[in-house]
Length: 261
Ligand code: PGA
Image 1: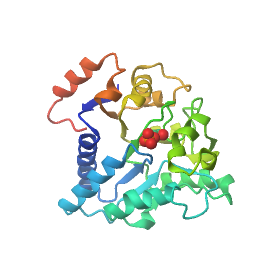
Image 2: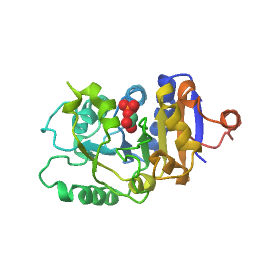
Image 3: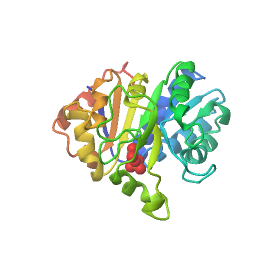
Image 4: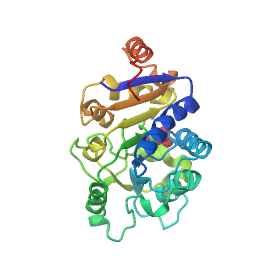
């Protein structure tokens, strides 16, 4: 079962997750981070940047792999995930840009971009901690409902729901790309630790489905139930659909001191 941690707000979630990542980087200075985009992880990245600066943590060897990228946006487009990761993660944390990978979403060479990305993750020794958000339709990465649990990095077609959800980042919904390249559920499940964050009532159904629903490709988030070390950090609103919430609170309150996140 995933560990469910209910916190007061996004900032508290960010600080908790950031503490665990700072510990990881101290233990493993060339740790491999799996980086999500979207609104959800922003508080975590802010907290991580603050902790890294305050504690003078050496992050120069930290490596990173983004979860996904849009296909076909012009290079340097401010909403490309390469640009978002640079702006929200690489620059504030002071990471070494050449060590941070994003799937190649340019139309040229797209046929082998997925296989190239898988090879790069393998060559890096795999992801130590994968940060995840979850879509209102249950997607993780851009693995929309129906994605195989064995899937690897590949091109996918975004659902209309996801294009609507992401329209806020673009001038109009029509400007949201139709295709993306995303790590597969199989890729994500190979990461050594999953940290899924979700905030707000709009995510309550997706969180309940991922944590307690049947394990089914129709709900990609439910793949986390197959992972031996998954942590779900949510606010009260996102936790509100969970049946066993009292038990999760009880388990976390009585967590053995030696056990890390
Ligand atoms: P959000 O997106 O963080 O912007 O809500 C989450 C997701 O689509 O995975």
